[in-house]
Image 1: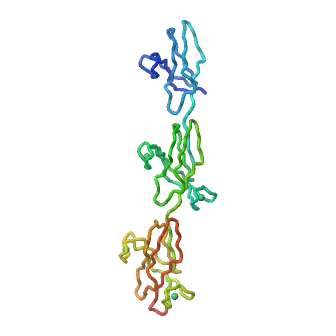
Image 2: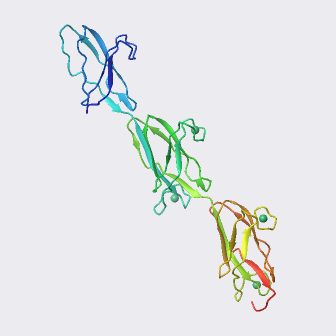
Image 3: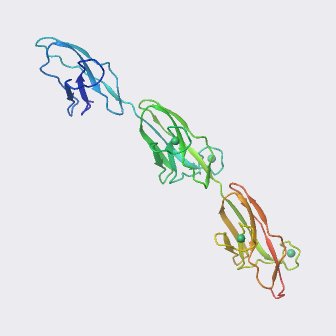
Length: 288
Ligand SMILES: [Ca+2]
Ligand SMILES: [Ca+2]
Ligand SMILES: [Ca+2]
Ligand SMILES: [Ca+2]
């Protein structure tokens, strides 16, 4: 296929550059070109290589004699750009493999870390995963690239940063990168500890409408910004989406109740789901 809009020139001083006074021409829509009215001479024909293309033929050296009409001096170019694509996936079983049943993660920022400093800098190509978690980097000059994520604090990466060698014209697919949520969850029941022994037993019921909170600053008060929840009709509560940390759960004590279990201190690790953190209260009102 002919390539249009390619600049060709006769490199009269043979320095490899298009200088003033050297006849240029631009290929037409069919990729065709011509130099006319040339004094007899030996000419080197070169091109100004457009970005993304590499020359596949040597620069023609042509001996123009008086009255000659030299045709079919064809010059080859090839698109030398490459492409990398893949999926950012939710690696729920943390094995580093995009397994059936695992989903793509949308809106994750990826970039090519050209200067390999671990940060997204100006001039480094960024991309954002689409609704299916898919991404691509296109139009890449041949080089070796490191793909990194501008890490979302809710996730830990489960696969190493891909290091990809892009060769001319390559289309490298299925470079999948795993993430797993590092958030944890705590849940349990606020129960009516009728016999005040600190154990949730048959015959004891949940207590609804109790406010529980994570006492982040450990001052035994519910402060603004501390996660709080209210027990449901079964006394059930949960704290979800918790960054890894050690949490103390306290309650806003109600008149007439005394707590029969210590305030739970819970170590939330990435991805943990901690159940049955039950908290007993003894009621001074026997009708409960
Ligand atoms: Ca997996
Ligand atoms: Ca960088
Ligand atoms: Ca009990
Ligand atoms: Ca507090």
